[in-house]
Length: 255
Image (cartoon, rainbow, N blue to C red; front, side, top):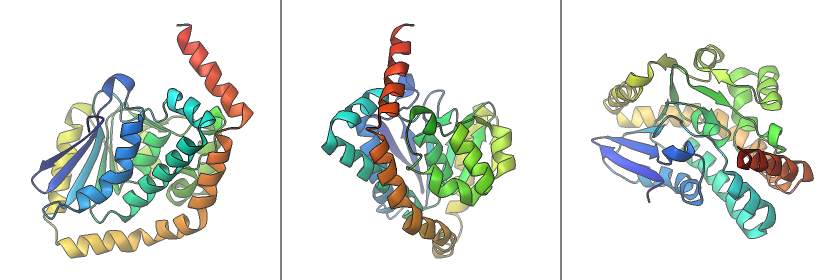
């Protein structure tokens, strides 16, 4: 797999989204890889911590408009896409290893969800997060509707999801979306140092503490995830979504 690169650095599994020219927007390979990688890294008996980041200048731009177009037309592919989204979310929440997100640049849509479901989030100065599902006619089912209310409260979660506004690195820390801002040129080193601190902790105590804290997320998964994902699936064929995607693709082609 080339779109998702996993490298063992001692007890740390470095997971890198590797489509830098596309700002790490999803490909079929990358989306499928993110659905399976959490079980893969947890199966390594030497692994203790995961660091998740993007290569290049973005963490992840989220959706790929070519894939969105195919999802609109291909029911089997649409179901596969939704199933992978389900596995990405549950895989991150249930992965026994702590996951540190090193958000090196824009984290948008699914990229935002990847950051939100990480256990600790370091964000580069100048980076931002945003969930613009609604702006392109989609239900924010693959993460935002589930986890944002737990992080920032209902009123602010609704504002962020309804409007899709960018949240700066500093604002993300203030809201509780990220732990701290780090200079971009020091971000990965800082994330790896933090990972080494976590790797040195008693394994069972750390893993069981993550599991206990994530019971709050498990409750949300039980109540929210399935209806949210199915609502997003249904919105994938909504005329307003189709028109929004066509407009964006046409605008990009006219440049």
